[in-house]
Image 1 (cartoon, one colour):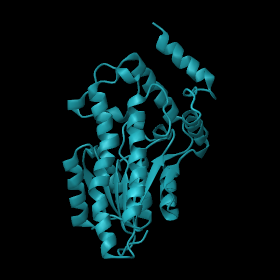
Image 2 (cartoon, rainbow, N blue to C red; image 1 turned 45 degrees about the vertical axis):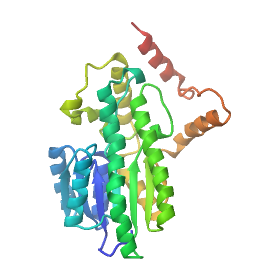
Image 3 (spheres, rainbow, N blue to C red; image 1 turned 180 degrees about the vertical axis):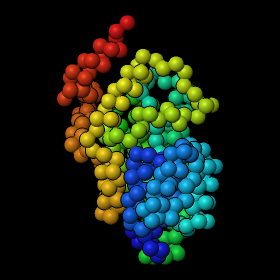
Image 4 (cartoon, rainbow, N blue to C red; image 1 turned 30 degrees about the vertical axis):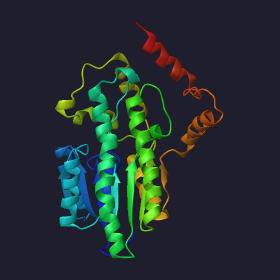
Length: 301
Protein backbone atom coordinates (compact mmCIF):
# COMPACT_ATOMS: atom_id res chain seq x y z
CA UNK A 1 0.00 0.00 0.00
CA UNK A 2 1.58 3.24 -1.10
CA UNK A 3 2.00 5.99 1.44
CA UNK A 4 4.81 8.20 2.58
CA UNK A 5 4.69 7.04 6.19
CA UNK A 6 6.03 3.51 6.62
CA UNK A 7 3.24 0.99 6.52
CA UNK A 8 0.40 3.49 6.33
CA UNK A 9 -2.63 3.96 8.57
CA UNK A 10 -5.55 1.55 9.00
CA UNK A 11 -8.98 2.54 10.32
CA UNK A 12 -11.04 -0.52 11.24
CA UNK A 13 -14.59 -0.59 12.62
CA UNK A 14 -15.83 -3.63 14.48
CA UNK A 15 -12.18 -3.99 15.47
CA UNK A 16 -12.72 -5.78 18.80
CA UNK A 17 -13.81 -9.12 17.31
CA UNK A 18 -14.20 -11.15 14.14
CA UNK A 19 -12.80 -9.82 10.85
CA UNK A 20 -12.02 -6.45 12.39
CA UNK A 21 -9.75 -7.88 15.07
CA UNK A 22 -7.99 -10.19 12.61
CA UNK A 23 -7.50 -7.31 10.15
CA UNK A 24 -6.08 -5.18 12.99
CA UNK A 25 -3.54 -7.94 13.74
CA UNK A 26 -2.52 -8.18 10.08
CA UNK A 27 -2.28 -4.39 9.75
CA UNK A 28 0.03 -4.35 12.79
CA UNK A 29 2.20 -7.05 11.23
CA UNK A 30 2.46 -4.90 8.10
CA UNK A 31 3.85 -2.06 10.18
CA UNK A 32 0.70 0.04 9.93
CA UNK A 33 -0.61 2.40 12.58
CA UNK A 34 -4.02 1.07 13.58
CA UNK A 35 -7.18 2.92 14.59
CA UNK A 36 -9.41 0.31 16.26
CA UNK A 37 -13.05 1.38 16.54
CA UNK A 38 -15.77 -0.66 18.21
CA UNK A 39 -18.98 -0.25 20.21
CA UNK A 40 -17.86 -2.66 22.95
CA UNK A 41 -15.48 -0.81 25.25
CA UNK A 42 -14.26 -3.78 27.31
CA UNK A 43 -13.54 -6.00 24.29
CA UNK A 44 -11.88 -3.05 22.55
CA UNK A 45 -9.43 -2.50 25.42
CA UNK A 46 -8.38 -6.16 25.37
CA UNK A 47 -8.01 -6.09 21.56
CA UNK A 48 -6.03 -2.84 21.72
CA UNK A 49 -3.47 -4.29 24.15
CA UNK A 50 -3.07 -7.38 22.00
CA UNK A 51 -2.43 -5.38 18.81
CA UNK A 52 -0.05 -3.04 20.63
CA UNK A 53 1.76 -6.22 21.71
CA UNK A 54 2.46 -6.86 18.01
CA UNK A 55 4.40 -3.59 17.95
CA UNK A 56 1.76 -1.32 16.42
CA UNK A 57 0.77 2.16 17.52
CA UNK A 58 -2.96 1.88 18.26
CA UNK A 59 -5.65 4.50 18.68
CA UNK A 60 -8.71 2.86 20.29
CA UNK A 61 -12.02 4.60 19.63
CA UNK A 62 -15.37 3.63 21.11
CA UNK A 63 -18.25 4.47 18.81
CA UNK A 64 -21.63 3.48 17.45
CA UNK A 65 -21.09 3.54 13.67
CA UNK A 66 -24.78 4.23 13.05
CA UNK A 67 -24.31 7.73 14.50
CA UNK A 68 -22.90 10.16 11.93
CA UNK A 69 -21.41 12.47 14.52
CA UNK A 70 -19.41 9.62 16.11
CA UNK A 71 -17.92 8.52 12.77
CA UNK A 72 -17.03 12.15 12.06
CA UNK A 73 -15.28 12.27 15.45
CA UNK A 74 -13.43 9.05 14.54
CA UNK A 75 -12.09 10.70 11.37
CA UNK A 76 -11.03 13.79 13.28
CA UNK A 77 -9.20 11.72 15.93
CA UNK A 78 -7.50 9.66 13.19
CA UNK A 79 -6.28 12.76 11.33
CA UNK A 80 -4.97 14.35 14.53
CA UNK A 81 -3.12 11.27 15.73
CA UNK A 82 -1.89 9.55 12.53
CA UNK A 83 -2.98 11.54 9.46
CA UNK A 84 -4.94 10.27 6.47
CA UNK A 85 -5.77 6.55 6.51
CA UNK A 86 -4.48 4.44 3.62
CA UNK A 87 -6.88 1.59 4.51
CA UNK A 88 -10.44 2.11 5.76
CA UNK A 89 -12.31 -1.08 6.70
CA UNK A 90 -16.02 -0.29 7.18
CA UNK A 91 -16.62 -3.62 8.81
CA UNK A 92 -18.90 -3.29 11.86
CA UNK A 93 -22.05 -5.34 11.42
CA UNK A 94 -24.89 -7.06 13.25
CA UNK A 95 -26.99 -10.12 12.39
CA UNK A 96 -30.74 -10.55 12.57
CA UNK A 97 -33.21 -13.20 11.42
CA UNK A 98 -36.91 -13.94 11.22
CA UNK A 99 -39.72 -13.62 8.70
CA UNK A 100 -39.48 -10.24 7.05
CA UNK A 101 -42.91 -8.93 8.17
CA UNK A 102 -42.11 -9.83 11.79
CA UNK A 103 -39.18 -7.41 12.05
CA UNK A 104 -40.16 -4.42 14.14
CA UNK A 105 -39.40 -0.82 13.25
CA UNK A 106 -36.68 -0.99 15.89
CA UNK A 107 -35.19 -4.10 14.26
CA UNK A 108 -35.01 -2.26 10.95
CA UNK A 109 -33.52 0.85 12.55
CA UNK A 110 -30.89 -1.14 14.43
CA UNK A 111 -29.75 -3.40 11.56
CA UNK A 112 -29.84 -0.75 8.82
CA UNK A 113 -28.27 1.76 11.23
CA UNK A 114 -25.19 -0.40 11.81
CA UNK A 115 -24.89 -2.48 8.63
CA UNK A 116 -25.80 0.19 6.09
CA UNK A 117 -25.53 3.65 7.64
CA UNK A 118 -22.31 2.66 9.42
CA UNK A 119 -20.76 1.98 6.01
CA UNK A 120 -22.37 5.08 4.51
CA UNK A 121 -20.81 7.26 7.22
CA UNK A 122 -17.41 5.63 6.75
CA UNK A 123 -17.53 6.26 3.00
CA UNK A 124 -18.90 9.78 3.38
CA UNK A 125 -16.38 10.86 5.99
CA UNK A 126 -13.14 9.17 4.88
CA UNK A 127 -13.32 9.28 1.05
CA UNK A 128 -12.83 13.07 0.79
CA UNK A 129 -9.82 12.89 3.14
CA UNK A 130 -8.27 10.15 1.01
CA UNK A 131 -8.95 12.04 -2.22
CA UNK A 132 -7.27 15.12 -0.75
CA UNK A 133 -4.20 13.05 0.19
CA UNK A 134 -4.09 11.59 -3.32
CA UNK A 135 -4.25 15.06 -4.84
CA UNK A 136 -1.35 16.26 -2.68
CA UNK A 137 0.87 13.31 -3.57
CA UNK A 138 0.73 11.43 -6.89
CA UNK A 139 2.46 8.42 -5.25
CA UNK A 140 -0.17 8.08 -2.47
CA UNK A 141 -2.75 5.32 -2.70
CA UNK A 142 -5.57 4.19 -0.46
CA UNK A 143 -8.21 1.47 -0.17
CA UNK A 144 -11.74 1.39 1.23
CA UNK A 145 -13.13 -2.05 2.04
CA UNK A 146 -16.81 -2.41 2.96
CA UNK A 147 -18.06 -5.57 4.65
CA UNK A 148 -21.22 -6.88 3.01
CA UNK A 149 -22.04 -10.60 2.91
CA UNK A 150 -23.05 -13.37 0.53
CA UNK A 151 -26.48 -12.23 1.76
CA UNK A 152 -25.77 -9.09 -0.27
CA UNK A 153 -25.78 -11.20 -3.46
CA UNK A 154 -28.51 -13.69 -2.48
CA UNK A 155 -31.80 -13.53 -0.60
CA UNK A 156 -31.99 -16.51 1.73
CA UNK A 157 -35.34 -16.82 3.52
CA UNK A 158 -35.99 -15.89 7.15
CA UNK A 159 -33.29 -13.19 7.24
CA UNK A 160 -34.85 -10.32 5.31
CA UNK A 161 -33.62 -7.33 7.32
CA UNK A 162 -30.06 -8.60 7.11
CA UNK A 163 -30.34 -9.33 3.36
CA UNK A 164 -31.67 -5.84 2.66
CA UNK A 165 -28.86 -4.19 4.63
CA UNK A 166 -26.17 -6.22 2.85
CA UNK A 167 -27.58 -5.77 -0.68
CA UNK A 168 -27.43 -2.05 0.02
CA UNK A 169 -23.76 -2.32 1.01
CA UNK A 170 -22.92 -4.19 -2.21
CA UNK A 171 -24.73 -1.50 -4.22
CA UNK A 172 -22.99 1.29 -2.32
CA UNK A 173 -19.58 -0.36 -2.82
CA UNK A 174 -20.02 -1.02 -6.55
CA UNK A 175 -21.15 2.58 -7.03
CA UNK A 176 -18.22 3.85 -4.95
CA UNK A 177 -15.88 1.84 -7.19
CA UNK A 178 -17.34 3.46 -10.31
CA UNK A 179 -17.48 6.95 -8.79
CA UNK A 180 -13.86 6.79 -7.63
CA UNK A 181 -12.76 5.64 -11.09
CA UNK A 182 -14.22 8.86 -12.52
CA UNK A 183 -12.09 11.11 -10.32
CA UNK A 184 -8.90 9.25 -9.31
CA UNK A 185 -6.62 6.28 -9.98
CA UNK A 186 -5.24 6.39 -6.43
CA UNK A 187 -8.20 5.50 -4.18
CA UNK A 188 -9.81 2.10 -4.60
CA UNK A 189 -13.00 0.46 -3.35
CA UNK A 190 -13.57 -3.19 -2.44
CA UNK A 191 -16.48 -5.22 -1.08
CA UNK A 192 -16.12 -8.20 1.25
CA UNK A 193 -18.85 -10.84 0.86
CA UNK A 194 -18.22 -13.55 3.45
CA UNK A 195 -20.38 -16.64 3.84
CA UNK A 196 -20.72 -18.35 7.23
CA UNK A 197 -17.55 -17.69 9.22
CA UNK A 198 -17.15 -17.93 13.02
CA UNK A 199 -16.98 -14.25 14.09
CA UNK A 200 -19.48 -13.79 16.91
CA UNK A 201 -22.00 -12.05 14.60
CA UNK A 202 -24.73 -14.44 15.80
CA UNK A 203 -24.36 -12.82 19.24
CA UNK A 204 -24.57 -9.23 17.99
CA UNK A 205 -27.70 -8.47 20.05
CA UNK A 206 -25.27 -8.06 23.01
CA UNK A 207 -24.46 -4.61 21.60
CA UNK A 208 -27.98 -3.50 20.74
CA UNK A 209 -28.62 0.01 22.13
CA UNK A 210 -31.33 0.27 24.82
CA UNK A 211 -33.40 2.77 22.82
CA UNK A 212 -33.70 0.16 20.04
CA UNK A 213 -34.37 -2.73 22.43
CA UNK A 214 -35.97 -5.80 20.88
CA UNK A 215 -39.38 -7.03 21.92
CA UNK A 216 -40.00 -10.67 22.76
CA UNK A 217 -38.54 -12.68 19.85
CA UNK A 218 -41.04 -14.35 17.51
CA UNK A 219 -40.84 -18.03 16.69
CA UNK A 220 -39.27 -17.33 13.29
CA UNK A 221 -36.68 -15.06 14.92
CA UNK A 222 -35.72 -17.77 17.41
CA UNK A 223 -35.45 -20.31 14.58
CA UNK A 224 -33.37 -17.84 12.54
CA UNK A 225 -31.10 -17.24 15.52
CA UNK A 226 -30.55 -20.98 16.04
CA UNK A 227 -29.87 -21.63 12.34
CA UNK A 228 -27.47 -18.72 12.11
CA UNK A 229 -25.65 -19.82 15.27
CA UNK A 230 -25.24 -23.34 13.91
CA UNK A 231 -24.07 -22.16 10.47
CA UNK A 232 -21.71 -19.52 11.81
CA UNK A 233 -20.11 -21.58 14.56
CA UNK A 234 -19.57 -24.64 12.34
CA UNK A 235 -17.85 -22.63 9.57
CA UNK A 236 -14.47 -24.07 8.52
CA UNK A 237 -13.04 -20.85 7.05
CA UNK A 238 -11.79 -18.66 9.91
CA UNK A 239 -11.99 -14.91 10.43
CA UNK A 240 -8.18 -14.87 10.13
CA UNK A 241 -8.43 -16.52 6.68
CA UNK A 242 -10.90 -13.85 5.58
CA UNK A 243 -8.76 -10.97 6.90
CA UNK A 244 -5.81 -12.39 4.94
CA UNK A 245 -8.00 -12.39 1.80
CA UNK A 246 -8.85 -8.75 2.39
CA UNK A 247 -5.16 -7.77 2.32
CA UNK A 248 -4.50 -10.00 -0.71
CA UNK A 249 -7.34 -8.27 -2.55
CA UNK A 250 -5.90 -4.86 -1.66
CA UNK A 251 -2.45 -5.91 -2.91
CA UNK A 252 -3.96 -7.20 -6.17
CA UNK A 253 -6.57 -4.44 -6.41
CA UNK A 254 -9.43 -6.97 -6.64
CA UNK A 255 -12.87 -5.52 -5.95
CA UNK A 256 -14.91 -8.59 -4.90
CA UNK A 257 -13.57 -10.48 -1.89
CA UNK A 258 -15.11 -13.89 -1.07
CA UNK A 259 -14.61 -16.31 1.81
CA UNK A 260 -16.29 -19.19 -0.02
CA UNK A 261 -15.95 -18.82 -3.82
CA UNK A 262 -17.81 -22.14 -4.22
CA UNK A 263 -20.98 -20.44 -2.95
CA UNK A 264 -21.02 -18.31 -6.12
CA UNK A 265 -22.99 -21.03 -7.92
CA UNK A 266 -26.01 -19.86 -5.94
CA UNK A 267 -25.38 -16.27 -7.02
CA UNK A 268 -25.29 -17.42 -10.64
CA UNK A 269 -28.58 -19.26 -10.09
CA UNK A 270 -30.15 -16.03 -8.79
CA UNK A 271 -28.85 -14.02 -11.75
CA UNK A 272 -30.22 -16.66 -14.14
CA UNK A 273 -33.60 -16.39 -12.35
CA UNK A 274 -33.53 -12.66 -13.08
CA UNK A 275 -32.32 -13.01 -16.68
CA UNK A 276 -34.61 -15.87 -17.75
CA UNK A 277 -36.85 -14.55 -16.09
CA UNK A 278 -38.25 -17.28 -13.89
CA UNK A 279 -39.49 -17.32 -10.34
CA UNK A 280 -36.80 -17.36 -7.63
CA UNK A 281 -35.14 -20.78 -7.27
CA UNK A 282 -35.46 -22.96 -4.20
CA UNK A 283 -32.68 -21.72 -1.88
CA UNK A 284 -32.43 -25.23 -0.40
CA UNK A 285 -32.06 -27.04 -3.70
CA UNK A 286 -28.74 -28.55 -2.64
CA UNK A 287 -29.85 -29.24 0.93
CA UNK A 288 -33.57 -30.07 0.73
CA UNK A 289 -33.64 -31.49 4.26
CA UNK A 290 -32.76 -28.05 5.68
CA UNK A 291 -35.61 -26.39 3.80
CA UNK A 292 -38.06 -29.11 4.82
CA UNK A 293 -37.06 -28.76 8.48
CA UNK A 294 -37.39 -24.96 8.39
CA UNK A 295 -40.86 -25.24 6.84
CA UNK A 296 -41.89 -27.84 9.40
CA UNK A 297 -40.73 -25.67 12.32
CA UNK A 298 -42.43 -22.52 10.99
CA UNK A 299 -45.72 -24.32 10.28
CA UNK A 300 -45.85 -26.23 13.56
CA UNK A 301 -48.34 -24.85 16.06
